[in-house]
Amino acid sequence: MTPSTIAIAGATGFVGRALVSALADDHDVVALARRPPTIPGARGRAVDVGDEDATVVALEGCDAAYYLIHSLDAPDFRRRDRALATAFGQAAARAGIRRIVYVGGLGRAPSSEHLASRQEVGIALGGAGVPVVELRAAVVLGAGSISFEMLRYLTERLPFMVCPRWVRTAIQPIARRDMLSHLVRALDVEAGVYEVGGSEVTTYRDMILAYADVRGLGTRRIVDVPLLTPRLSSYWVDLVTPVDSRVSHALIDSLSTEVVVTDAARTHDAFGIEPMGVRAAIQAALDDQVVEIEAGLLEREGGLLDGVYTERVDLGLGAVDASAVDADLDRVGGDDAWYGLRGGWWARRVVGRLFGERWRLRRARAVAPGEPVDWWVVARRTPGALVLRGVGWLAGEGWLGFRVGDGELVEVGALRPKGLPGFLYWKLLQPIHRWAFARQAQHRLERARTT
Image (cartoon, rainbow, N blue to C red; front, side, top):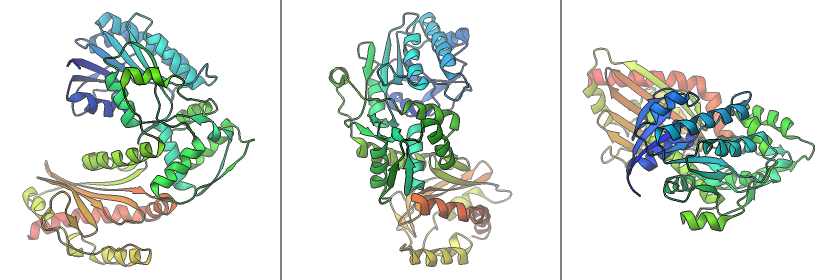
């Protein structure tokens, strides 16, 4: 692969950010978005791709471009997506782009607005003569994908569910890792339409069961109700999941269409990728999310994002020496007093034992990555920052992080709930968490003043 300058339109999206990382070692990457994006490994440029002249300027100096934009949240998304793709294709031709790579949708002559729109966009992108590699895919299994998040929330929160007919429609999902591999290699294959998918054809019903199995949630009981139409089921999804309803409704409308690969041999001959199966893809999605949380925990904002609840406290240092706070981070472990709220943490450990948790106080040999400390393992320790990952938490996967510098202390706590008990644990204790995290952050400064 020859190093080149690659533009990614839609770089702030779920696939776009991961694609920046996948390309950054071998290419100069330009990230395009409405606001100048700050993404490690890329140069950000602000552009509205509907403005052809501005897009020509944004693509200046680029050899190839990825188009990862959709308008499912717009009222007339089909018309808008065609218009945006037409403008981008014309701008690419004027800017001298040699290739456009695009992720479209599987399905033969699809009746749904969403799938039909995805295929129309591929045609519109090539209307000005730039060669297009169109990768047609079904569900991409990765944290942040709307389809994956619908799967996550439904399965995590509902041990018993009533489902419509579309849960038995054939679907061939692909792991985000495999999608990224196809996208990277798309820079070198012959232009054209390629169908991409994982190694298994399944159904949404079986994906629910597979997710529950991989996640260790126990049996999910599913009752099919043929009279539950896509429109009615979309309202049901709205009640259970926090996914944007404008997007989820469009996706649910497409779930009555079979989306399977019909020419796997052609795709394999061109790309040479052996895709993983459904369970492996779900496990990879969950594992990749852990890595991403630990790398970016201290940049997370408070609230719910991709199945993870976050509480954040930003506290000014005042007259406290940042180096004293940092030094105290190395004293974690072996004593409830380090956290503050000593009685609260003691009570939390006692209550946890009633439900099978075996938290115990313990000091680390050194506060370094991989070292166990109390009910955590050290995920990251750099000057001014500490990230701890929970061990043996029945409620799910938990993280606690601190960063000191630039005149402030940042404390971030996060929980990826496991099943309905984990969800209820967080929601019921949320007011306590907010107070406790604020008190713990203040405690960090109090310790730094006295040590």
